[in-house]
Amino acid sequence: MKEWKKNIRKVVPYVPGEQPKQQDIIKLNTNENPYPPSPSVYEAMKRIDPGRMRLYPDPSCRMLVNGLASYHGLDAGQIFVGVGSDDVLAMAFMTFFNSEKPILFPDITYSFYQVWADLLKIPFKTPALDEDFQIRAEDYYRENGGVIFPNPNAPTGIARPLDFIRDILDHNQDVIVVVDEAYIDFGGETALPLLKEYENLLVVRTYSKSRSMAGMRIGYAMGNPELIQALNDVKYSYNSYTMDQTALELGTAALLDENYFQSVLRKIIATRQEAAERLTQMGFRWLDSSANFIFAAHPSCDGGKLFQYLRDHGVYVRYFNSPRIDQYLRITIGTDEEMKRLYQVLESALYGNI
Ligand code: PMP
Image 1 (cartoon, rainbow, N blue to C red):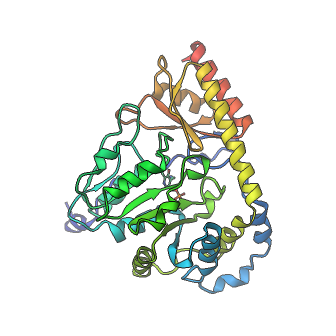
Image 2: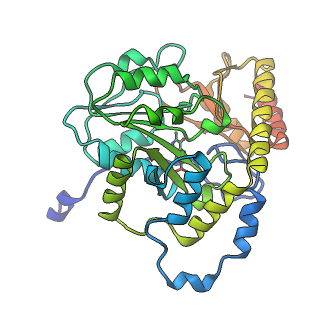
Image 3: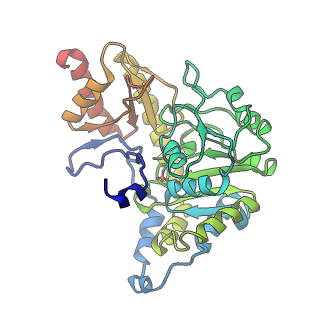
């Protein structure tokens, strides 16, 4: 082996869902929103001045930070913003998980957590979800170097109530507890009210799902000013200009139209309910989802085969070939039209074509 090769970092990267090139694919594989962003974003887009691009963006991201602060009724000092919540979460790993003790996150969860832990050489343990795929609070009572989990969890979609978060926080006063609320707008109780009581809580959100802006890459964290300051210190030690000016402007504009936002959420939740009914009729078992996807398995049809059959028929869903979940498909809630096509292909698979 060439000597220089020994100094190359070896990592097993996170594998994002496929982004197919064909236009006619029904794309239910990466939990994007099937509806467009708010009209206020379209309006703001018209005001974007390309001439402004010769200048660096505002490194403090003041416009967006202030917009989010007033939206959530917090102080600007309680908000950190980044290039999607992946960026915010990676910063949080770097900033808060520096103990010799292992950090804790569930065995079945957002698979990026393990990738960041490996990349940053952070020891970790992954307590198993119970038989019903629920996170068990008791597993997080042991000594650790930090705690992170999504609520609702992914890819299960299961949300735990506020008392559960409180329980975890009560048992973890000496470490930072990160609650990843990527899907909270679709159901479940936010941990935000607990910010007043727990100085070690960080709540992370994204524009990628509920705000229909995955392509714009906007995420943010909320927590006590000391945590936010620490995140900013790490950010400025790494890359001061993380967010581009267009993202700052459009992200701020997106907050202006609450009615549109709520109507999109209502639509997706209604479609999710219908999906649960249709899947039940077809004999699927599914987990009770509070997210914009549904995690479902069929007792008499292999998950991997079903995934492939759907794919061959132009319907992309997400399949994880991992222990305990290899019979499940994670199906993003699309438009009613897209879902209709999904049901058709599922029916044809189940009625003997697989
Ligand atoms: N957290 C969870 C639980 C997710 O499923 C995702 C989406 N892949 C993210 C964070 C990251 O989303 P984004 O970087 O688009 O904000």
